[in-house]
Length: 308
Image (tube, rainbow, N blue to C red; front, top):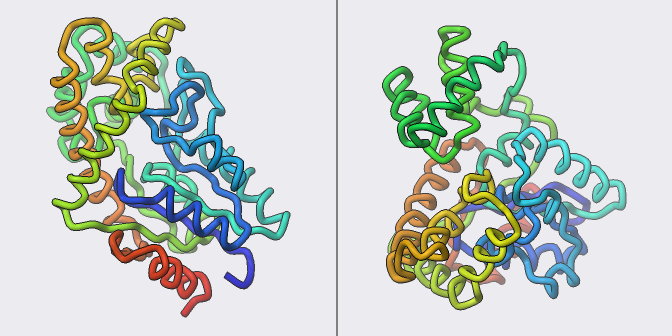
């Protein structure tokens, strides 16, 4: 990395992205721009595997703790703030290292999402939001699946904002919503090298199970209890994240910790599969073996950044 370039380190959850990004940033004097949909929230540290205070002291981190857990946050907002952070890092002559597994944020930064141009109607949106409140997110997602099965396959039932938007667009225009537009041929807003860590499926699942246990040992249930005690609604966007959603019933006394742990691990494995599907559809991603060892990974990335 002889000159500053934008590097994105991504991959499924528990693949080792954060450790690799930290090592690269340390070695090359870079700064990290977090690319995680939950690490933007204050007070959500354990369940998001947020970089520790010690890690943040070693390398500057951007896009952490920029919203309260009760506030909504969109991919468009992320792209705007991340672009500001990347521009600032480059202006200091340093390499920005993006790190995270939120594919939608990566695509937004690469310029492949179009959040405008489609009409909006607050009354139509409110109608679908009312369905979700009355009958639940799964029921609203089932409605989308009935009307537009292709888009429904792209959206998780917990992604309420975009499920509502998909139904709104369909009703107003008669055309399907396109949540995963391909990046533009010119490479988007800012060209970047994108590397993703890959693991054999059984090894990745073991890492996920270990990570879930570690989060519980580190106090995830207490973190969830503290958020609820501070008045954060279980229905808040942030609380739909894996780990938080599963621990709420336990904290409220409706299920056992063992059941919550099993559900959290299962949903995390399913989430990892969705991440892999998304990233494999993303053009220009260089896949590296997660078990290759830090020295080999650093060497591979050095060659990628130098264009060799």
